[in-house]
Image 1 (cartoon, rainbow, N blue to C red):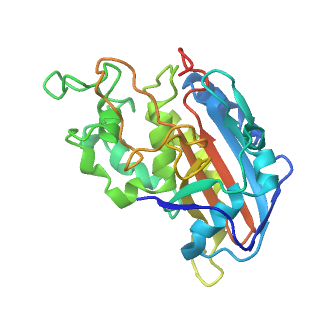
Image 2: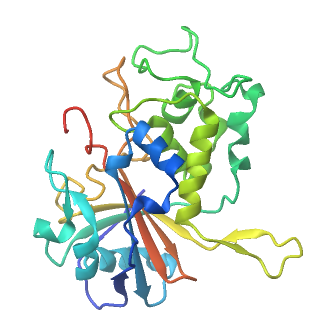
Length: 299
């Protein structure tokens, strides 16, 4: 469940945009090509800010309330301005000093791709020996299932999938799982890929640029640690506003639930806005996607 908060009292943090922090060129050419093929490149935005003050997880609500109400942040953050108007600066929407933000804590503890071994293992039944996604047989499909869904996409998004418990709910709240989920479902205009390896390599490339790994100096095996805190955000102009400005649509209760009521079509990734706080670097990164960007009908 997301915690809600709005309005700013005493200021405890100062936020400053990091030069080059909003460019996606930090990703390699192959990753950018994959994102374009999967219909996500146009809707993705990354913004990075340096901050002063001490970040404490239990005060995350106050931290993000101050962040979204910071003038420097509002002049930097890009959001969709409407159904077909494209992206604009948050400040151009005329928002006041009492913007409202809902915050949900996620996890960022995974340090390697063995996290996805359960999917890659052919004994699980999701992947063929050649490394491609398996298609469900006619008895595994429900009437509302999109025609485009294979067993992996069903595992990710369908409650009735026989593999839905392959990852527990806490594991599904890992930032790396969220990234993989969004990539596999793709954007509104998506050329699906059936290669697990391409999705995993792209997930790793993005995840590796959002969190900074550290070696534990007290460990003989130099084990890799992550000191990042991940959150899901929903920013509104006010607490009474039912529409999120960032990421543009209000997340579902569990953020990974899709509306499959239309059936038979192509279901794309929901919009998202994730914030990754790295206290050792004194930086916060906002990584977001608005599915309306590049859709057929400019929803």
